[in-house]
Length: 335
Image 1 (tube, rainbow, N blue to C red):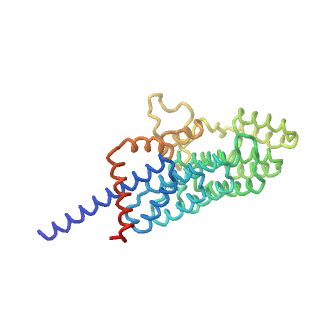
Image 2 (cartoon, rainbow, N blue to C red):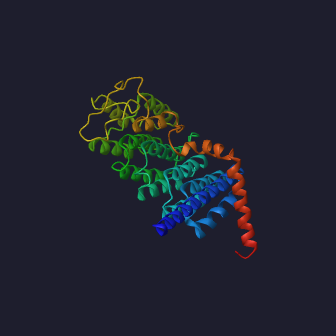
């Protein structure tokens, strides 16, 4: 009995020690993020990921990728994300942080690669609807920047393949937004035949890609300014015919019920006003409405968490001790 108690006690002490070390490493990495010191963040993370991977937590990977994003080292962050996935510490927050960086830097190629990788590893498939909506939003932001610059037709075709492969894996309401914007992007790129075929194919499979009237009017004004409106009327006629169907609903009205077999979609105004907006579908809709500023999603609360941890003097003091201890060990030959 005494021997078993001693073994359990040692296990508990070792587990607590690992937790403390993981917190110290996370605090040290967060300090690097706050100081915009990506070089030391990468050095710390790579050292412990190689020599002590058992203390490297998902928060450590998220902080390091956040530092890479701030320095514009998006491809370095992607390499860390791939290795982190092999270690089992990759999270949707890390992927979304890089996608956000692609949007900021208008890196269309990497955004498409990241989204495809997230699908191939099922990281996006298992993510909450709010995170899936943010991924689509950031992908569209990288594909279609606000300055009006259009991506290449090849990039749009790759995005179209991602849309078609994601329709059965991601939430229907989320992929609907991606399909709508891609159809309008093909019109803006002077490929109305591709947009028409895409809309017709989606309708045959039960998805109506007609945008809201306001979004349609904005697209018409943009096409008129570029002289490409005359070739797009067939697609807009299809959009209007879809909106006349009884099953068509504005995407901003509801999404609840579409993912539950045998359950009819819930009409607008069904929920009482006092109902807390905590269900997953409304969270995803809020991400689209607020342009990705939904605080319920994990990746968009990173800055707030960094502020909270940066005020913890004990953790940062311990993090400094950890860094000094590592430097001393290196200088002393690893004793």
